[in-house]
Amino acid sequence: MAHRILLLAATAIAKSEEQVGPTCSGTIELKGHGPVQMTNAYWNVPEDLAGNVEVVNGAIEVFMKGRTYFSDACGAKFNNSRYSRLYLLGKRLRWTTDISQTDCGCNAAFYLGSLHQNADVSKCEDYYCDANDVCGVRCAEIDLQEANKHAFHSVLHLQDDNSGSGLGYGGGGIDWSWHRDWTKEEYGPGANCIDTNHPFEVEIGFPLGSNGELQALTTRLSQVGSPCELQAEIQTASYIFQGRPSASELTQALHEGMTPIVSYWSNEDLQWMDGKGADGLGPCAEDVPDSCGPSVQFYGFELESLDERLI
Figure 1 (cartoon, rainbow, N blue to C red):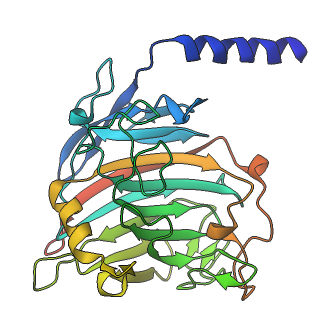
Figure 2 (figure 1 turned 30 degrees about the horizontal axis):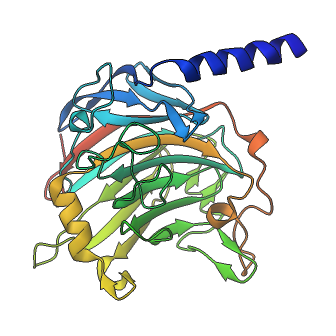
Figure 3 (figure 1 turned 90 degrees about the vertical axis):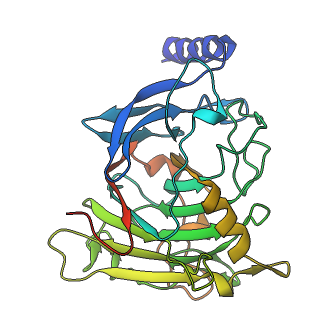
């Protein structure tokens, strides 16, 4: 065992001394858009090596601490101009996720960031940015899915708002509770609508108001063979941060095109996402990162107008 630990440590040191650059894990098909290449992060957070991400039979398989970026091209060096820009205003994005190996303390995430527009290489050396300053650079962020088998959230973030405004189920602390749009009887292992022991479909919509700005973020979860679906929405009119209405800033970020990002990580303090909360209605009394399975999957990506469905 001691020999194996030393070998793993030596491998990590050797990798850290290599030239920092991306791993190009393969190409997926985004129906309604075209082929997309995946560019894997080198660092999970500064000085902490990222986990692996693979493309297997058209599915993105993300291993613990892995993060990957939708890209128009993947080269030998990180380049923000290669990151994909999806134009999502007035459209919906749909995919299937398998998070059956996750548990309390795990986060299988699919989200948007303004990476293409970010000229700052960041502390992760790959132009990564988000609303939580993970790699030292902030930008607008839209969490389409932050989830494990027990909790699911979609969240809008202005670039300087860590918490944001969201929807879904799970989370809270001693004196507060987060989203309660659904219940553990509707979403979770063995639940009657979305049984997270099996893959399920997520659909996120970006409807426009009469003024041409983002009106809401809509989330719909469905599952083959299920008798019901789960739906909720965030109205941008209700999301005001430090006196700033969110609609115009989020509309601008979406108008410029945002980059989809997939990641998988864990933490012993993920109660904000999956905790019981003050009302006791959340799912997880304790977060146990060691219970997280090795990987999660995302596949079956489709992009279409809100006015019509793909045939």
